[in-house]
Image (cartoon, rainbow, N blue to C red; front, side, top):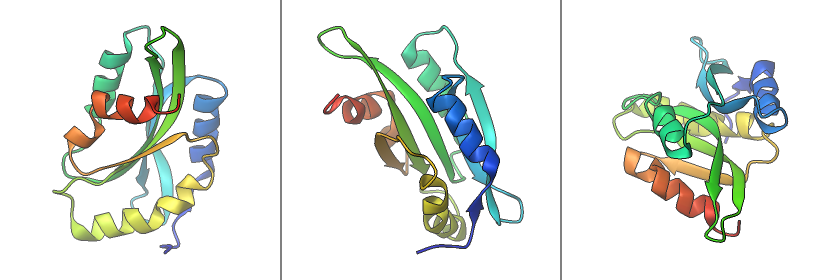
Length: 144
């Protein structure tokens, strides 16, 4: 199912900067005002803070009432002490979002996702408990 929405070239360029250049910690994507293309809404450069506080800061940029997509370079430590990093793709569709917006985001996701080669984990969230640090850590650390 496709909505006819396309991903702006800047979406893929920002993703490459996150994946290969390690420039960004995360990217938040949204639909343009006319709902014709997917655009980069926000990026955040890596900071020296701890992984949990960086992730919590990312969550503050997701609306309780509007859908978004996001990519996060999720870093964590395995029980053996080894550091790992996985790219996580989020489909954020909160329960309180308008039905029309949820449908448009769901049918447009593939236009963005096709260009994001190398995503290791995909998470669909409808409330913040589904995208909590612990929940993402659990999914990311499987098979790491």
